[in-house]
Image (cartoon, rainbow, N blue to C red; front, side, top):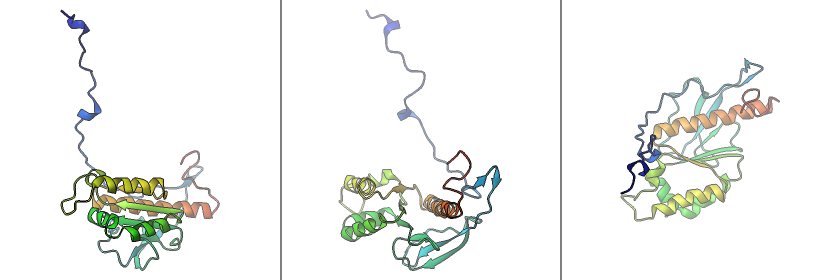
Length: 204
């Protein structure tokens, strides 16, 4: 009979696959990030966010008081969101799940063309306001293979070098896009004013 002491013992720390994780996002920060030099905070201007007039379900940035100087609607040459004065270098395209599936099927050629144009922008971001787990799941109103949509996004990243992020909710998407636009403007201002592209000394 096998010695009980030699039997495999249950590990003291359970596998991460067994962990029960409860998502509870904390409130958004008062300001996404601050820039400083020598321990002194820099007085940096606030950006004006541009929302494309054709955006049907626009993200709402009104609760991010103090982040931006203004929020304006404007017909953008590409994408759904940008920054006033940086329209030629910054573009954000937003898709909810149904729009993403539609863009990967019915309007695939037009969507690929927009992504190729986005790839020419120094600052570009594709935001999916749906969890990646939903992108990877069966769609109730389409027989299209979720794997093809998922791999389309990966190809967009690897081939066109257009990064994408998935947010679990529309509201988290608002915070992600707002933070991105805020920081693109901030880093651009720092570099344009000879402060370099970093927030503080010996840091990012």
